[in-house]
Amino acid sequence: MNLFVTSSPAWPVFAQGLALSLGLIVAIGAQNAFVLRQGLRREHVGVVVVFCALADALLIAAGVWGMAQALGERPGLARALALAGAAFLAVYGWQALRRARQAQQLIAAEGTQGLSLRAVVLQAAAFTLLNPHVYLDTVLLVGSIGAQQPPGLRSAFVAGASVASALWFGLLGFGARWLAPWFARPRAWQVLDGLIGVTMCALSVMLLRHALTAF
Image (cartoon, rainbow, N blue to C red):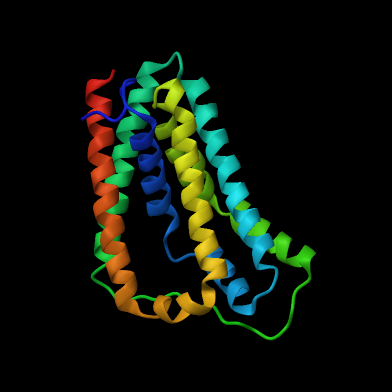
């Protein structure tokens, strides 16, 4: 079944955006460690979670609708980006499957010195907006895939991808005390990376089919 045709209901497109965003965001990185750290310290957790989630949502929306406008009259470019996105997801999935064979962990030290609200927001902005992967993954990749959805279903895709970010950052921030021991277990990350790898490879196949049949 082609998830990109106009007769598709909104739910599969929402689920695709959700799965894609989760697969990209759930990785060991500075932003995740920062959110987890603030959760462990119970310091401005709500502000950090809301900031990161809203920033992701705005970047996703800008990517989808900006790319949609750019690709509207350029089917050749749209196909090239779809093929490039399929290749990227395949490589990303393969790397996740490779990581699943190795032991790794995410540890965020609690620290002792408290930070002001302004300092926390500035740090959250730096970890979010100064990370080049944010623009490569969130704006370009997610945006180009979302832009190739039918116009009436792009909002569902954006909603799914944005909900994924909100769920993940909320889980990291508000569940930090419970999640920290779990995240410190290499086996947990191996299982998670295995699931991410399978999901990304499946999305790559669907995007490849779209690129080969829709243009």
